[in-house]
Image 1 (cartoon, helix red, strand yellow):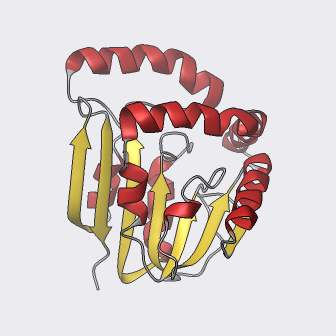
Image 2 (cartoon, rainbow, N blue to C red; image 1 turned 30 degrees about the vertical axis):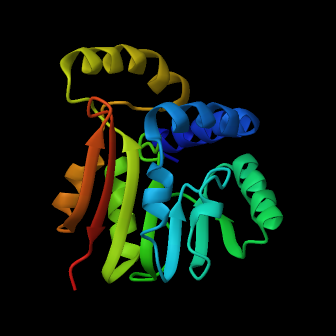
Image 3 (cartoon, rainbow, N blue to C red; image 1 turned 90 degrees about the horizontal axis):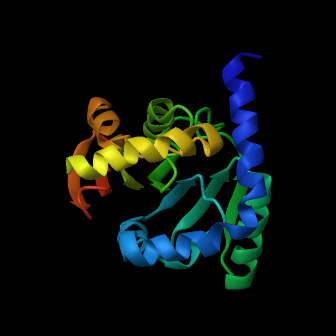
Length: 209
């Protein structure tokens, strides 16, 4: 296997170790940075929905009741928590282990594809976006939320310093911009918000028919 696969496995183990503390950590960031952005994303989902990197299932209670939900996650420990959350909510969802960079779904399988706060930590985010577009049906919607490279230079300098620790430790990047890959794939941007010094960006894009 190539060296990248060894890196992927190391990162998978990292997220397994942090699965139990993930919800507690994210509750702070949801309050201070992201606000109602998870609800903004999930409320726009419809039909057959794929959530890529579903994590511990924090978005599960936010989807419309009538969606047909599939979740993909590469950390078994986080997936276990997501399954327990779905059971507790009485939410019917197909939650399966898999890699966002190489998804085992047919082309044009989903009406909506969602990824929240995950492209920052997927090793090859460009490849992951390409996979999301591949499994999205023509006319389908791609919904993304992430922290991105800041618009203010002092914040960008801080992000650069943070990455000296976060990238080697857990593969988490602060200076990515998924919008560029979405536009390069030819999707039409329908809605886009960028706030908190440009650090947070949420996108709703449509795949051409």
